[in-house]
Length: 234
Image 1 (cartoon, helix red, strand yellow):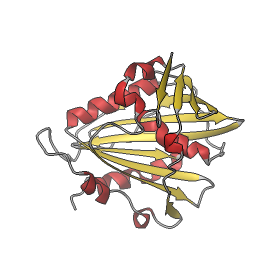
Image 2 (tube, helix red, strand yellow; image 1 turned 30 degrees about the vertical axis):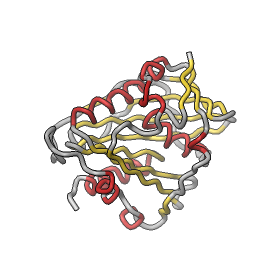
Image 3 (cartoon, helix red, strand yellow; image 1 turned 60 degrees about the horizontal axis):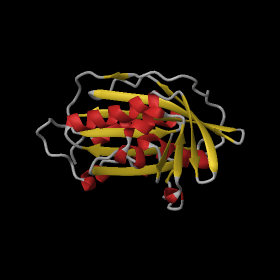
């Protein structure tokens, strides 16, 4: 069974496929098996179920900037041509079962969102992308669970991006103890003899959902910093 999508595979693949297009670093280990890891504990709350979600403009003001990241980072221009490539998913029933917007969109389906992507000159072809979403906690939790569980349910599958076939393997990993709920996974992309590993970690803190994707070392380096800025009223 095939599922055609217009931009990417839920919240992960839009970023990961973009990273893959310009990266051939094989220094990171390639994951081989998935498991579902989702943990949570009370933390500083950014809202309750009755709070009004933050606007996209407010979220944009809480994204990390070049100044926050430090030297060596530059904004990554949006690749408008890649957004229009058709993507076909092969061999992943869990993604097939999602259907609707979750399987056909390049981001999580929440009305309030903001995104920033950066390249890092300190490590060849390294990138990091930050996404912020806001909604009532129950919706953020359910939507994120749905995508990460689907990805974790597929240890191996393939995507066709335009005319390019990419083999994908997934592995759920433990996220740092931040926020109230957290999810994290590694995705390995392989095509033409080149491998790329992308890490994605999502943290829910009240009415905020933070998703940081990219080179594993950069995700680990900036996750706490991104959450601190996102959860601070400005």
